[in-house]
Image (cartoon, rainbow, N blue to C red; front, side, top):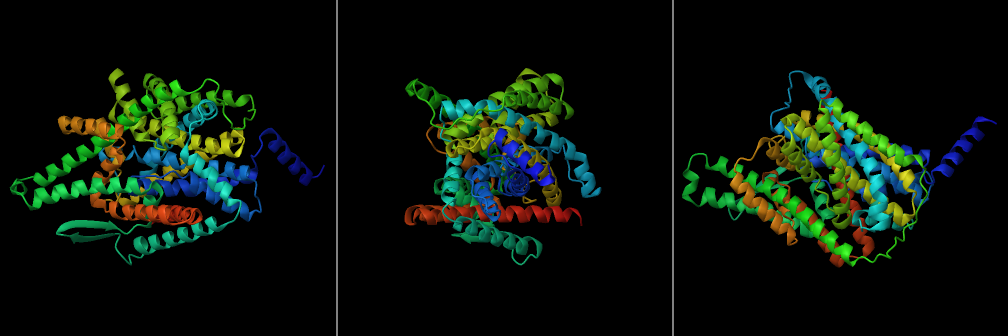
Length: 560
């Protein structure tokens, strides 16, 4: 038997054991995970938001597979599953760990150089990311059957990805739109940040009220992807802060009081954080009430229509081994045994809730779950401030990763993709994403010189985590705003988005994001379905182009 025949035999053997898993899909998953994770890290740091990468990964996978002449939608879906794996790992890190810099526990010291900075923090961040990947992969395998096959949760993002791949079989127009907009956004970012041909932020006034507009293709893309109503609430949050500051500082005698501007800034931050935390609590309550009502209405005869595959018997055992490895990894971060055990229990609860909320609403407040587990653990035993951030980060990474993976399992159920193939490629893509996110996270922060508005990295969600770790500046104000945020969410008003808009007012993101929302609204109401899909792919290209180029420029800056 020659070498060629041996290779063919190995490929046939692997496909027979795990249908739809191929070396081609694994290679594309690795390359795609690097690109999408790096882009997502930059987007989350710059915009304090991270739209689901699932549809973007599906289109990219489809385009690349077509270059190989492959049209098997299930092999394409397996590659897309691995490509998107690292994006929410990046989100979990970015939405929590910048709090270490905000609180002063970690510092960006330029004197030692980039290599010393990365060497100081690389292993800790990587271990946190790997722990989240191991836990997310394992727990989602056990949750898949319950959430998708038994309860048939909708998972709107997973459905959208499946629809995109189905539509892609009829032509490659969407891929062309994606490529063109991605190149445009990357070029725009290069001209803006490297050659400084135009400013990143434009300031102007309307009726004497100061405004700012971020020159960011990414922001427009985010607005188009999250939709008009969400961008309107984002703009509302920014308008509340802008108008309140203008009225108090420009038209009242209060402006003459010493320190009033700093006090306003502190109050605004407290209210914004409280709205976000309250919104997370409201989301949980909505989920609990909604699940109870659905259980009462659900017929006991209901059965899934998804195709079931017989999984290799060893996967469930492997998933348990991954949980044990995650426990060991958390110990390696310096955490004691008892906190690590409590963290495992808290992560299981949080991942279960996160996977169901994502399935029902398409929303995944991963950092809020981190805060909830953190507060619960601190009520039981003392935890240092640094380890508190580690706990929140592991939970956030796991929940973000779980939301992405369950969306992938949903698209796989609709397309009849083998879930075992998705399990293995997700694990591979997750490890690659953990490494990439760690490098990109530290590189971007070092290049910016820190975290915060002044550095261009607002990290809104990390401020929420920091507030819970350090204590509240004004507990009464926080409590009132948190109750308001919970109440608004229960009535269907996204208080979390309003809070982010309030926090990012000075960053100029609200207006370009709202512009993207207007584009989405016009396309949805006045264009045909094919044109709507093209605009959505264009939005994904704007998001990915600036994210990838921004990350590349940050990494290049490390070597200067």
